[in-house]
Amino acid sequence: MSDCIFCKIAAREIGSTVVYEDEEFLAFRDINPVAPTHVLLIPKKHVSSLLEVPEQDAPLMGRMLTLAAKLAGQLGLAEDGFRVVINTGKNGGQTVEHLHFHLLGGRALQWPPG
Ligand code: AMP
View (tube, rainbow, N blue to C red):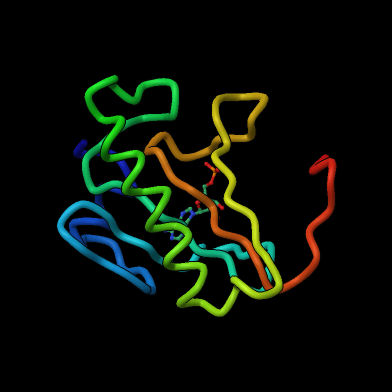
């Protein structure tokens, strides 16, 4: 989508610190990290939120989830643990309308999240 900041990051029209890329996905460092490791994983294809994932993209979502685990390992988070978060909508705290997983680790995270 032309006015989507994450589409622009995926198209390399806006700079980011990329930690992983393949044909389907991009992972980059969050500009405002809330944990020592805070990476965003996005599908390159624009989907505005988890609520808008079409049924036929279930395999893509499965690959995204297994990729999140693989990246957590590569980022050194597997041993101590980490969190994958999908903020969705107003009450979920979603601010960017392009589906993204937050991959958070490097410190003990609180629960409930507040
Ligand atoms: P959410 O609030 O769940 O929609 O998450 C959006 C995230 O995108 C926030 O954690 C922001 O810090 C992050 N963010 C916004 N703009 C950028 C950017 N240009 N590069 C990296 N991260 C960004």
